[in-house]
Picture 1 (cartoon, one colour):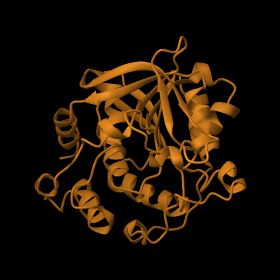
Picture 2 (cartoon, rainbow, N blue to C red):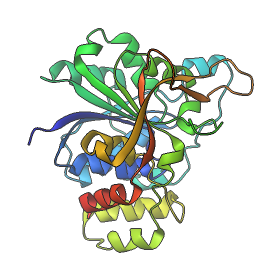
Picture 3 (cartoon, rainbow, N blue to C red):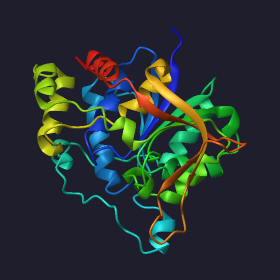
Length: 294
C-alpha cells in the first residue's frame, strides 16, 4: 500500500485530542509520519512530551521540531489570551526526559519537504503559526505540499474557535496560500465524544505502551468525556467518505473589535479556497481511532 506522507503540526497538551490524532498517524497503515512540529505556549515541554510519546510508541525515528510560543502579530497587539500555562499536568508525564535539542519547526518542515519524492500533507492541530511561516517562506510550496488539513474555525454559528484565536493572522495566510485546504470546524468535530467508560475499557492494558501513554496522560489533564476534535483532519486523508463537505471561500476576521478570530465561509464566492466539513460520521471515526490504538 502506498502511504500518505504527513507532517503533524500540533499544540499537543492543550487537550488530549492531539495525542489521539498523533498516535493515529503513527499507527495508521496508510500514513507515513515524517515529522512532528509543536506550536503555542510552552513549546519546549510539548516537544519533550512528543519525544517521549513517539519513543514509547516505537516511532523514535520520527523527528520533532519546535515552533513559536506566540505569534509576533499577537505580541504587537498585546494579545496574550488564549495562552496555556505550563503547569497543566502534561509536563509531569515527560519529567524524566532530557531537555534535549530540537530543530526549529520551519527548518524541520522544509528539510522533510525537500527530501520527499512526493508532495506531503501537513496536518495542523492548533495555531497555524508554523504552517503560515512555511506558506510564506518556502518557495517550492505548491510542488511540495499536497494540502493543509486543519482542525479549526466555526462556520455554523458566531464563535471564535480556540485554534484560530491563537493566531488569526496565520490562519488567513494558510487559507489563502493557494494550497488545497481541508478544515474541520468546531461544530461537527465536537460530536467526537469519547465517553470515559469506553476509553477505560479500550485502554485497560497498562503493559501496552500505547495504552499506558493514553491512560497516564488522561489522568493528568483530561475531562471526564474528552472530545477527539483532532482526529478529523487525520481521517479525512484516509476516509473522506465519512465526511459531508462543501467548497467555500473561508476567511478569518482580523480587524473587528468584537469579531477578531471569527471565521466566515462564503459558499457563493466565485473563487473558493477551502473544503469544509459540515458533518461527519462520529461513530465510524471513533471506531477507526480506537481500532488503530488498541
